[in-house]
Image (cartoon, rainbow, N blue to C red; front, side):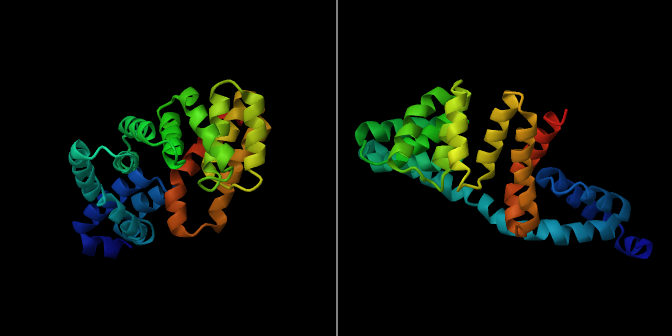
Length: 245
């Protein structure tokens, strides 16, 4: 290891730097930090091959930002001549993908005002409201969605409706719906929102159980899914720390 580090100097330092930056951004298992730190360049190479190289496939997603923003600009221009519901729905979806939930919500408002016969803009507006911390406004849209299609978006709609009930103080209603949804849904988001509800009522043992279910998925997940689920794994670990006492 020492000879290899010497041969790679000064590139080994650069590789370590790249590995540490990737580690901070992606937050894989903590043991990787010690491998990078104590094994030097060889450790950095191992890390980059095992953890960073598979992420190259995800990097391609980042480049979609540019065509997406170009399409947003095109739609804004097109809407001046053709302010159709379809154009506003597409614009709202693009804003959602871009993380601009306030603009997305406004676009869905306009789409719904022009045409209220499709379910998706109501659902997406409800999701935007939840992500903006406005659970009260999300309720009618999510209730409309779930009443028409209980399994909409693979059960996410019902899970978010349960979360909206919890956020608006309707905890019994929220728990009943969470228990119904989690019979078939395995979404980490739903499990963790349920855990948060249980923790808020001091039911720490049950909260730990649901947070642990998220972490238990790691064992059988393929690598690419583990990388996508990392934010949920981190949140699950945070919940477990909070309810461990």
